[in-house]
Length: 157
Image (tube, rainbow, N blue to C red; front, side, top):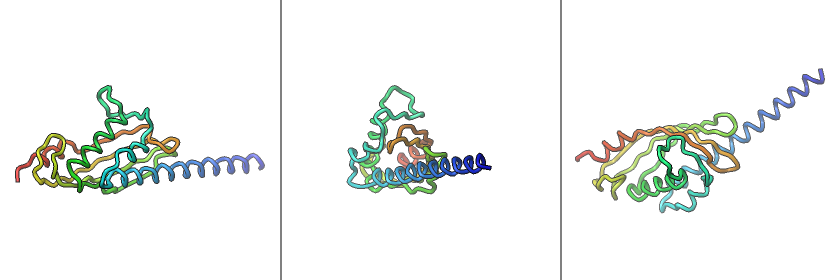
């Protein structure tokens, strides 16, 4: 009977540790999107969320994943100052990963990703999975509606 009590106690401790880790990761990612969408945009503040050796599993080049992510958010803030993420789902996966579904909406008022500034509104969706360790983003996987974004940015009014 003592072995059973010990096993239950160990399982409860493991579960509470996983829940605490998952809560920290979801809280971190929620704050990350607040900073990413704040205006004026603060690249240095956003950089604090990323580990220097972060891995972007969708990166198809030899680029530094942290710098690429920061460059992307910088371009989004500059090209569409009113743009914002609407987080539809922020769900823990295990004790160190978070699944996020978002919609990203804004207006191309200052030129965005090579599209001329034309006042076009855009609305795309995406999913991301982040792995968080020691309060930093260490890995992420992502899927965005980039072809839809391109079409919306280029559309003639």
